[in-house]
Length: 449
Image (cartoon, rainbow, N blue to C red; front, top):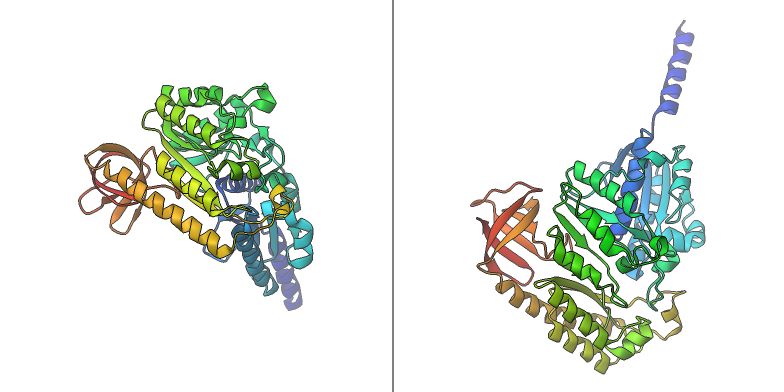
């Protein structure tokens, strides 16, 4: 009897262990497009009855999936370091399985398999069904358009297309994401409606190239038509536009922004540079003069629009004169928001055949100089808002302050509005009218009206 009980107990334990569902922790690195990919992965896993967490602090997951970034050197290093960290955990028996997906895996799969064999499998950016199959999960087509969000409940990213057809000399994105593929207007409206039902009030349209939207499906640039339809979705109060390429920009986008109150007076338009010689080497298909005219039209058609741009310093051959042109351009245009990147010499890109002849020290010096110029511009523009009353969406409470954003600001990268909790009360995820009392370079301070 004792032997029978012992055998029975062992059999029960083995059966329990065998039937136990894996607990998966998904870790996301890189941009907002990766965030959406991770959210789709989590949605599919939950649809297969998996217990899934996102970047959980607890270490009780037995399966780790790392969604990597492979854009520039710093991002690649962060991805490799994270893979190595969990490879060590796996060697020590802390987890059962380790999978890697995303851009780094797409671009360097063969190298990674040799260098970090502890990873059970590597998957590219478009291999979600294969990753699910590895976990004995089905790809559920009925869940397409449904999405568990990892952002705060009141805002979400809406990826309207995948890939890019541009051939910028510095960019490896087409190598990792492939050619441009648009989602249909109908599918995007359905996805936005689902997000609204979940409590999302702000959607941020993202793509590698926003203005290309629709060329493959509708044989024309159809972003204005998409905006018309998204503006009809009940519950969505803010629609924000990210990553619009300036060359051959469809001016109807400005008409849509001006026409629809739900579309934020905000445009993220990476310009990269302002020297014609650098723009030509970068293969940007636009001149400084054409860029200036586009900005003039934007501000004429949408008075008060906040233009966010990103700039790239240290591209091969960038001279002091060319860099000074960029500095002068920033002073002249007085952008509301600016981000600065240092050039990363990426293999297999057109720019890689050029000599990476600007030293890391000089790249950093130029980036810092640009940001100092922008700090002054941002401070002046913020001080102009003192005394104004602005609509603010509140994201979180931090220390003594409720922290939110105006329609001119995107999460994580732009300015914030701070309201002292001692004197005011707002609900996270709600809008409130705030009178601006004080201003710093990148922050506004105010009180609830």
